[in-house]
Image 1 (cartoon, rainbow, N blue to C red):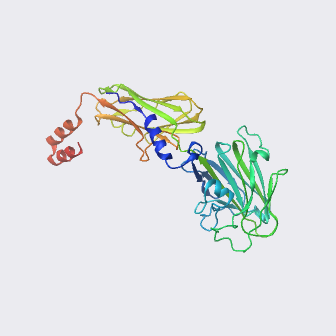
Image 2: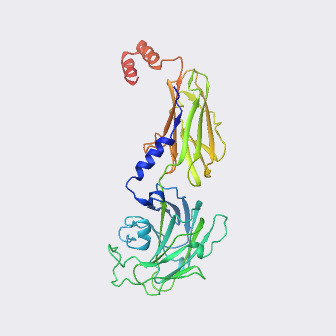
Image 3: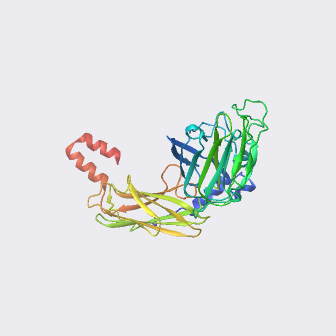
Length: 385
């Protein structure tokens, strides 16, 4: 029997089923999500869960860096940003002020890989008695122009219901002004509620910097990030073993082929879980991949690397069956990490390939040996078998 596992057909079916009822936009980006912020002191990480949007790390010299919950301040779906990415209610965002003694603060996000153009956006809120200068670098590390930042327009997130409870001042018409000559979003000096603006970068972004300064009052700025993703598992994974049946002491190689059948993927991840292999075999740390990088931790050989459309990467994980294995089968599990990766079922089982160890009946041997020593142990062993 051929035990190789090809996930392409199943994943295609899952993708079609997952898109049912979404409508005409299903062929484009059909899902959106807001970034989640993790804060530790003056630095942290930002990630859009469930998407292929790259993880970012940020640092700031502001004296007031926080991650509010989004319960009382949010962008509802009647705002331009909310219309594009959905309401941010109950979604966290980054809140910041100036640096010490009112000096301009600098907050910078560095993405692990360039954030893809056209598929994400960021909004700045509460830009009324303050100003925010926006700087960014592209995939090549060079500065982006103001036009490439993709200014989309100003709005007031308090203007229309459902109105956030933080909107308390009664007149919600204030909007900041964007100056492309200085790449600065500037408020109208008076301290109001809801003045905001948003961007959708037209070039990939490797880093994003906000220089925040005060004009009057108590300066507070807000930053939301959200992204589109299509949710299709179009990075196909094929896993097989050679040989598929082997006696103790035999070398076995688990081979995995990874192919990108969709758009470029700058940061693909996959793990070969050996935790159901190692009770019966030895891994000598000699895994290899045709590209990308490998690591081994907690019984898993993990691969990561970029993929271009149509590109194939080959991963090989050799093991040697023990002379006296504790199992009758080696169960190798491949788990793709990220929404585009095949071989994932939501329970961590992924795609499975099994090698049968020939010439042993583990249950008979365990029960027989136990019975000679202790009847109770034998009964427990029999239950396990």
